[in-house]
Length: 276
Ligand SMILES: O=C(O)C(=O)C[C@H](O)C(=O)CO
Ligand SMILES: [Zn+2]
Image (tube, rainbow, N blue to C red):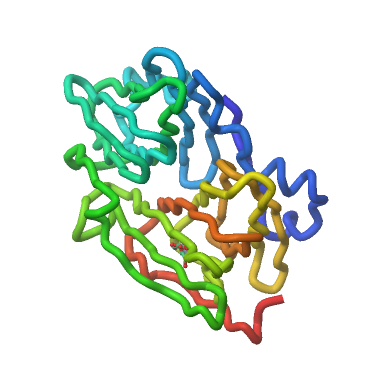
């Protein structure tokens, strides 16, 4: 499993484009017919992509976790960003359409993935954090996620946030997870930008059309750097880093957070007069 060790804010100021990308960008999660793991020293997040193009795929148990089963000490969010498919947890199977999410609680059984149609596969995005408590495994359909509408056409940042795993909704030990859909004609996410002193975040960009890119902005608010991101690529965001982006057209992304609290509103806004 590839381990992403992240530089601190001071070192990040001096990175070349390739160095910045190798530390903060995860660009190879979704590989046909495979489960691909990436491990980061960012609140101990484990990411995986599972694309079942033949038979079903087992999540398995990476040696790095030194556990008997994946969920022995962990909880998992699984978002389907592809066509319909099934996730099996222990003896129970859950059918996930596009943009449905399965929360899997600590202590759950083995996880496996299957596509409805191998030729048009499901693409399962897996985010896992350590869990010091157990919460029930729950399927959240996109239609049942809490919707928050943000932005305006004038600011080219009209977007819909769908909150799937959150306090008061599907409860978890530390994971908070959802998606943001940028509306047609808008391009910006999370601008004005913010940081989270008490949490870290992972952004996975998807449904970015071929030939288009998102300019993801990261770094300390006065030291902004850009990482060019394409479809199915994720960016790791430490607590000192903003996380925002502008696409060459509308796109969607999944945000997932772990850390000291689950308070969605616990963020430090960066004034437009202060960002540089
Ligand atoms: O577009 C946005 O704004 C977001 O999606 C913000 C993310 O949800 C986020 O950064 C949550 O902390
Ligand atoms: Zn954030």
